[in-house]
Image 1 (cartoon, helix red, strand yellow):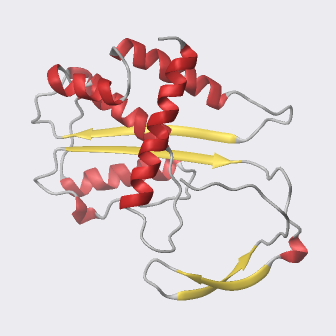
Image 2 (cartoon, rainbow, N blue to C red):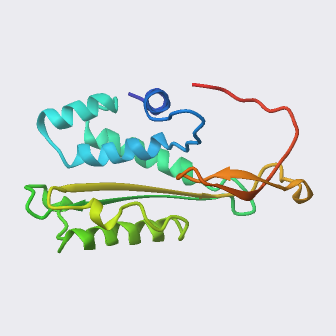
Length: 202
């Protein structure tokens, strides 16, 4: 399979994942940021650490013939994604993956990582997330989310910072009501702009 076909296949997977998430996870008026590439890379990591029927099924889902082919494809995609597209330095984008594994699991040596206790594992995952998101996300796991039944934690962090192609006029920023996850309303500044824009739905 050539590179163009491979990327086209990954695009098909991305749309399928997005459609599934929007149909089954998102309820009501909910905002969502989804990175299909992040999900695919994590599934690629799982495939690399597995063998037999499990690996075959993952490779089939990811539309790849082998781990080497998959690694080559993701290496190329990551190089394209991180390529600097601006003479001024371009946007800043980073993708990070982390794996925390129960030392008792019979995994390949390259996937083993010893952990002392559940609370410490949660702290490690949260610290890793904070670093990889430049402090924007400080916690993704409660200390009690990891217990003696936890065998494997896969985490992916995606960080993006870039300038708007068309900047918002600061004088058009107004305070409006915003609802927190617990439903409580707060007043926050909203950027506004009036113009025709292209949009699509999946």
